[in-house]
Length: 162
Image 1 (cartoon, rainbow, N blue to C red):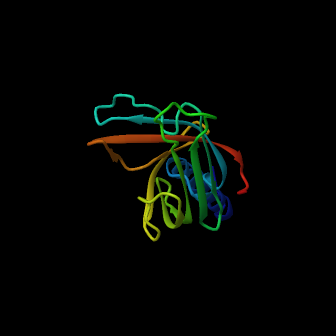
Image 2: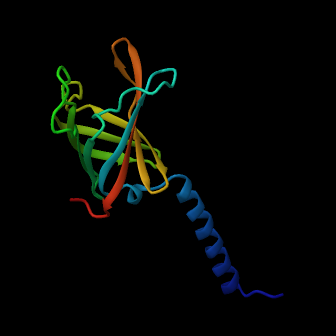
């Protein structure tokens, strides 16, 4: 079988594109996270992996929007109409410019409702995809002398930021 230079070049380009697509599947680019997402679940576990009460309660609500220019905003809260006596409503919101390398989302915060999130500081989230869901994993949080590991699950409601 004889191949022309043009034919070999085309075959090489096709092979390189296919290999690039496989690499992109392993480490998604910014386009994979751009859009508006709603929170569909949140989990918490202690250092031993034991399940803890759900962050933001049993009816957690949240939206996160990430645009292609590298700007994001997030808001999360306990969505119950009334809380049991003695229970504080969990609420968080922040925004800023972000970078995403395919595995880690880093937001430089420039506004926040949460005192422990310092303006000018970075919010770092590990990222994975579970089917079509985006899973954001914050660093462990010290609570009552123990470490809490959270995962927040999001479904895209629009590929276009709000």
